[in-house]
Length: 386
Image (tube, rainbow, N blue to C red):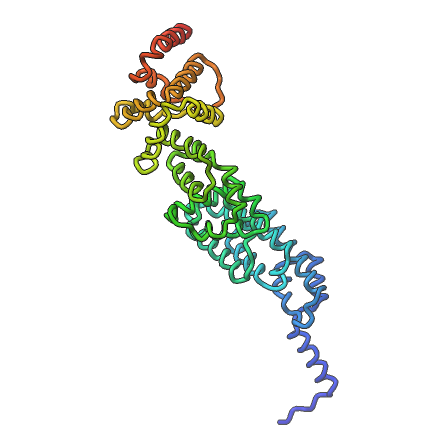
């Protein structure tokens, strides 16, 4: 049986309707979705616009909706893994990969996402993988990591969860930025950099990061953090010293003060201890140098020697105590004077107060000189307590 022929105008109408369905959404549809604040449907269809028609008006609509959506999920605290992947994917796709406003909001989202993510101990492996995924996206897009964002990461608790290669990429982003000198003065950047060097076991040779550090940045670090050689964690001081010394950032006074601090406060066996010992042996005949070093110690508000005094019976410590009392007696006077003030209830501004006052007054090098004054003060304090 032969079907009747349809009128030609009917056939054309059906064809036009079919073409419209397959053509997808047009600019007016996208504009309506922006006004309706409907990001889900918008991003399902914003690429329906033909490439030749993706002009400024289209870019504007995409930017408006993307920034609205990112603000919305941030405000609602929707820092989910799904949203992480969506934000990352959209930031890699035209035209948002060229949109500075979107990248700024993206960085804020990512910062909060990883802070939240790493707090969940069960999810930390996934968080680490996500962070690596994000850094790789910067490489694929050939975009430099934003220096301020990298700094905020290193400044936060996130830093404790990052592996050495990841820290390296963040620091690279900072050191190669136009505002690198601002961050070279930041404690979090310096400590992250030093941690990276230690983790890479590269205290002797230059790391890739050191090779891109400018002389100006190194000078900024030295100006801001040389005192870390004396006041920083004892297990890191020698690393700080070796780094600054290797880069010719220390004066002879800096080095001499470090030797004294190392010998009295942190006498680790090694080449530095030998050098420190040799220098201490020269102080006995140089009253001016002893006063200069003592004034530096006071300026830094340091108290050295707690460990020596608390463990005075050890043979090595006894030898160091004897050497110090002979060659640098003024330091013993300073420690005793400080202890007397504290035991008498005076407030003194120090990096940390002395913890071995009672032990100090019992050692042979101190007992004969300060014993009577110590016993009298001790008796007075005990009487006041009664």
